[in-house]
Amino acid sequence: MELPSIVPPPHGTAWPEAMADAAGMNWMWLEEAARFATENETPWPQDLRLHLESGFFEPPPFNEILGPVRPRGPANGLVLRRGFKIASWGDTDQVDFTFSAAKSYLSLLAGIAVMDGLITDLDEPVGRTVDDGGFDSEQNRTVTWRHLLQNTSEWAGTLFGKSDMIDRNRNVGLEGKARKGDPRPLKSPGEHWEYNDVRVNRLALALLRRFRRPLPEVFAKRIMQPIGASNDWSWHGYRTSQVEIDGRMIESVSGGTHWGGGMLIHAEDQARIGLLMLRRGEWNGRRILPDRWIAESLRPCALKPTYGLLWWLNTDHGRYNSAPEDSFFASGAGGNLTWIAPRQDLVAVLRWTDPTAIDTFIRLIMQAVEP
Image 1 (cartoon, one colour):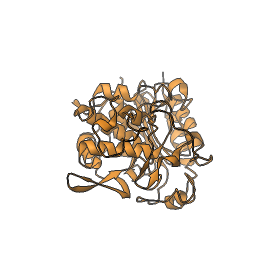
Image 2 (cartoon, one colour):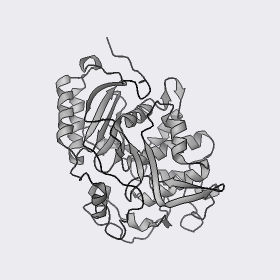
Image 3 (cartoon, one colour):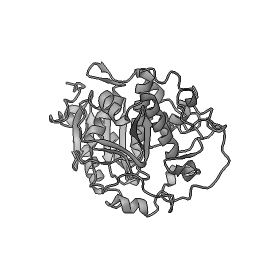
């Protein structure tokens, strides 16, 4: 009898588990995948502050830490099939920074903004509804919401003490091993793809301007509470990112942990977010995000086919060779990954897995999926 798809109960109640064979999985390959992930922990030190200050992302003084940082824990993770937990390793309730996986959470908030009519057209210039001076220049005035969500904005400026120049000429595939920050002539918005944390933070601030309340508050009420997530997560900005909204000071959050800050969260909550995306924005009969928003999020960017709206895609197996082509990912530096494989009804969360080992982990999981 085929295992039915389930919605897990709220955090605090045991996540329903299933034996591998009941889930249509080969238990030997599944156990090998969990063992492999445990034995292939990221080479990053546990003291993340030392790692950031060492110049991994950029040299001094551009690496100045502006937000909270704390040590990471050991590798952990889990695998879901049809909503059941079928494998886990380490402490999956361990709360850690998740680096750029937070960018995908900003995409969810953009979907809520569209749902609420706060963004009426992704191809409308942001400056038409966000009047804070950040989109007044000749370079920035035609930047659209889609540009910011696809990392094609070419937005130029300094935000919260960090210049967009820091991430110009950035090669994500060579993170920590290649020079970046060199000047280059800017193109028009929409004509160049570049992974740039300052520009993502500009998106977060623009969303804050539209919601007019803290993004973590919106995220809790509209995403995390409806899917039964814990209260263990928190989302941070910088000591420099306080802005005034309607007479009160609100911290604008970061889309990563480059300079501290970002999302602190555990694998269990990340699995719920992955399951929400797998189920196309629906949770236990309730529509959390429009199906059309999920489809838009997963549409390949013309300039970068392995990227959607702040979600990584696997177009032409360009992200992970062993993953199905329709897979998509929330990905953060240091080996933090949420992998969603729709046809296989799979969600896997990897925390602090050596990035060079992730494709092998995916291959082992795919070998475990019985035809």
